[in-house]
Image (cartoon, rainbow, N blue to C red):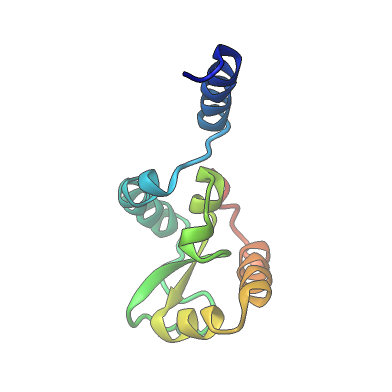
Length: 116
Ligand SMILES: [Zn+2]
């Protein structure tokens, strides 16, 4: 049996983790699925309906600053740029740091404020 203090700490840590909006890998897919229609509406309302890099409209999707498996907060999950499949792949294959910088740059350059 584990010492009580350790278990108490675990529980506290867990609630702290949840309170701060951290998400577990298991939650991530579910959260993303429910977030997606909200993001789509938000982008449409802001008039962003084309690729934010090339203005193309083919196979659009949301691109994160990190590969999704490294995302652990709701804030990061909600931080996206709308990219076509070609631009998305290009950004994803440019390396982890480049990907972060590139998506951040796209978001900062927007004329509309997309913060939640
Ligand atoms: Zn594009």
